[in-house]
Amino acid sequence: MNEDRLPDVRDGLSREERVVLWVLHELQRERGEHNVPTPMLWGRVCEHFYISPDDLSAMLARLGARRY
Image (cartoon, rainbow, N blue to C red; front, side, top):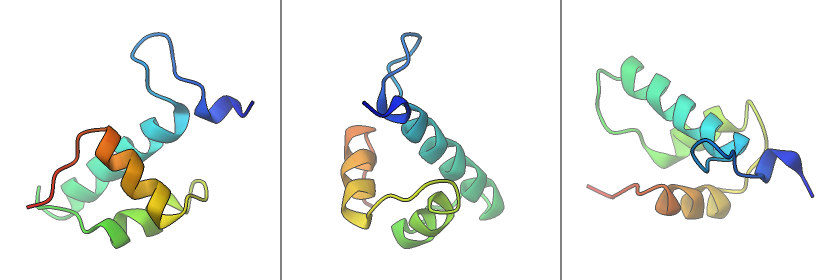
């Protein structure tokens, strides 16, 4: 099993989920706390590891992301 997908015992987040949340936070700071388009987030996340757009959308839904 890929260790990047195992949830951490402290908070239940996998390494990949933690990277996505960190990248999202950085993009929100760059954009002045505005919403971040999913394609922009996907491009930045792919600089760290590859994830398909559908898998990223599913992960964001699991993490509680909402559309505005």
